Length: 110
Image (cartoon, rainbow, N blue to C red):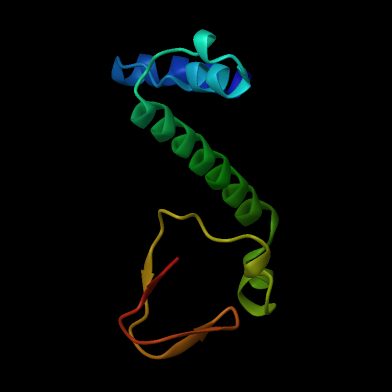
C-alpha cells in the first residue's frame, strides 16, 4: 500500500490530479460490493496499468545497472531473462536475429 500512497502523493503534487491508486487497491481487497469506492472503472484500470508498468520499468532499470553491458550484448539468452522496458520500441531495418528471435525488416518490437 505504501507504493500506491507514494504514487498518489507524487501524482497529485506533480499534476494536481489524483491517480486513485489507493482507491483501486481498496476495491481489490474489499469483498463486499457495498463498501467499494465509486470511481470510474476506466480510471481504476488505468492506474493499475500505470503501476504495473512502473514496477516493470524499475525492475528493468535495475537489470541494466547490475548486469554489465558486455554480458547483455554477448551472452545469448541473457536479455530474455529481463524483457526491455515496454515503452522503448525498436524497428528492424533489415532481416535480423536479436536475442535468438528472428525479426523481419520493418517489424516493430520491444
